[in-house]
Image (cartoon, rainbow, N blue to C red):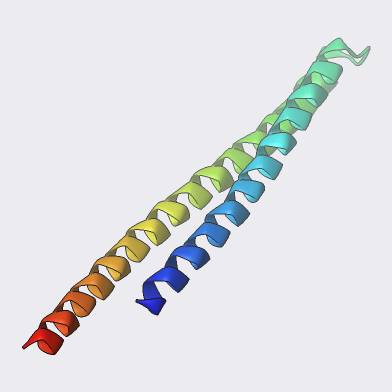
Length: 101
């Protein structure tokens, strides 16, 4: 019984940490998009603008990949925790049955 309550607490703290990471990464994407807008409006020649924009877009793609990877980790962790909770409940139920017998 105590184990399942500890498990749910650790799950909550893990996901909130991941939410902070995702928010930070999304903020970075917004900053990069703002930089793209700034470059687009700059007085640089077309070739320079294109090079800068490509670099910024590559950074956005990397961050989006990180967000997806974090999302997959969260899903896997959530599935593992659900399986563990189910196993704990099964053990708890069988223990109750043993006590009753």
